Length: 160
Image (tube, rainbow, N blue to C red; front, side, top):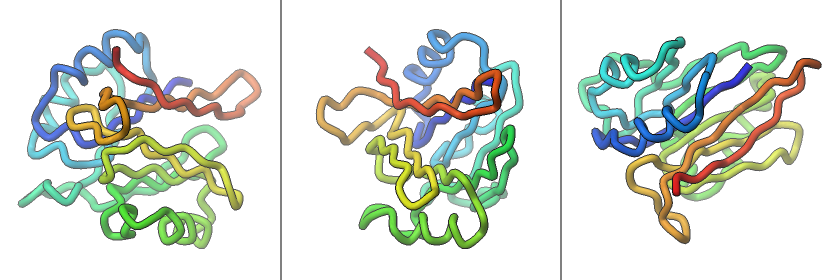
């Protein structure tokens, strides 16, 4: 199973379209917020289910602020992250995920990619597709791939 994880598109879709094209077949796409009303357009870009949550710039949105998903054997919490102050660090969101029995927490908001598996919870931020803030400023995204044994492998990827 292959899961594409993106965040913070902010109505700029050229990089997202390129990422979808170069990623190939995906079984699920997760968008971690700040789609700014473009949910239907984004859903139309892929031939798989789309899970999406509201970000701090999704004004007047009916999107949920977070969701709990089951991906293979993994319990996954998806949220934009601003309610957990992720700009100040990941401890609050990691503690929340662990307290809810999650194996993985995915969040956006900072526009900086992050991947860490400390304290029994994988914390993943794919960065931003449209306004990257990390060194090099390349649009970034993440992949969660579940192998034939059911084990998840995570990667942060950059658009060249």
